[in-house]
Image 1 (tube, rainbow, N blue to C red):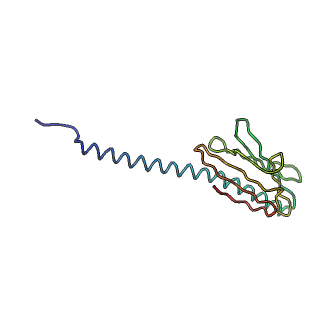
Image 2 (cartoon, one colour):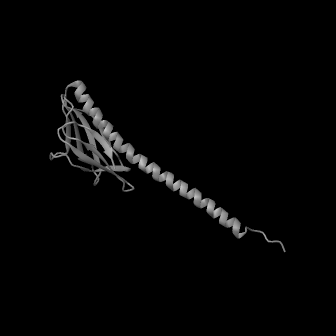
Length: 150
């Protein structure tokens, strides 16, 4: 009698191959999500640096305003040039990540860079992605150093 079909060993090998492929896919997805989180934080940090250096270069203050969007915990920020109050840039992270906290000492959650490059105050901007990962963008008072950390 001739049997057709697969042996138990063949089925185990196929399941093992699928398991390996699935684990590689999951790991690459996690790496992608962490990379996206870093992109949002680095975008914010580079915008802050740009505002700082533009204020030094042009001799006017630049203001970065943070405010809550329409949905809960969805924050946006915009950059305004101080001499003519022109809005230069408006950024919203959308659905992938959002700013969950801004803790500058003033009540309005604003940050200004003066023409000498110093910030109005120091503080931390906390960003959280959909996976629950948190990353911080810190602005140091007086010197204006901006850094990104986990």
